[in-house]
Amino acid sequence: MEPLRILIVSTPVAPLGSGGGGGVELTLHNLVHGLGARGHRVEVVAPTGSHLVGVEVHEVDGALQTSMQLTDRNTPTELPANSVLAAMWDRVADLSDEVDIVLNLAYDWLPLYLTRFLDVPVVHLISMGSLTDAMDAVLAEVAAHHPGHLAAHTRSQASTFPDPSWFRLLASGIIIDDYTTHLSADQPAYLGAVGRISPEKGLEDVAELSARTGWPVRFWGLMQDPDYWERIRTDHPGAQLEYCGFLSTHDLQAAIGGCSAVLVTPKWVEAFGNVVIEAMATGVPVIAYDRGGPAEVVIDAATGFVVPADDIDALAEAVARIDTIDRLACRQYVEEHFSTEAFAERVDAWLREVMAMAQVDRD
Image (cartoon, rainbow, N blue to C red; front, side, top):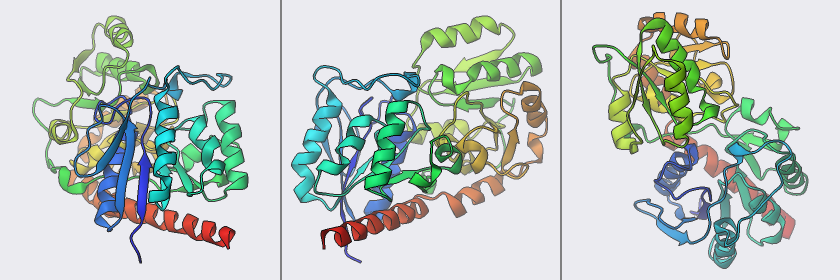
């Protein structure tokens, strides 16, 4: 098959490499690698200051967009003055004659609305669950007028929307060779938690677990909400908590590999949870709440444990059984199901199907 010219549009909430874009940054990096390895020509549109090696990045100036995670159901759609989101889609329009398809990773109203106005097919890999009525409405419009153009990561994520059938399910993937397997945990033992330091991650439950059980916990991720972090520390004086900063993928995988387990305790529906497969790729089991994508990825009692959401007693019971998990099996599971090659193959098939439908419509 002929290679495609693919333009990937990043999130407008932060430059690539800053950590502010959350899992979208890793997803984009892995897609660039995987699709490029399949022979496609891939370029990226992203905010100024983005760092991505080995691909052309069209950097765009402007005021960053507020993340949708900070909204409620009735939050109106807004663009700041000198919006980077608007400027990024001006750049997409300028480049549209040079590409075969546009892959949007931004969870924002504007790119969804613009789907109908560009001559090139535009597809959207949605990175969050349903958050606002305005987003649900524009997603419904895309699904009605451009069926097949929407994708999600997991069934749990898709089920938060009015009609889960809008979405093709693609899971995710990582560059397996970037992760070293640790067949044993460091001693003295500690637990880990990875992700933005912000309330939707439920890190207060991790702190409560530490206070109850005496387990030390190390945290890695962007310090998005320092006040939240200080509240956790103040409210759980008996917890042993250490913030270890935001690390690159290379440094993060080396750091988390020594954990006895990684804890995933979200208070919202995570779309996928890349940290789950990152941890397991290093051999580290994952203990996840039964909420959102992570619960679909962890195989209970085989690659970690899935426990009832918000149940700290169940979390503690799972930690007590963590030595029953085979760390090599965790690595092998990721190799079999969540490699970048497998992820890129799924995305490639999706893009080609959309292009074939677009060709039929033109004919």
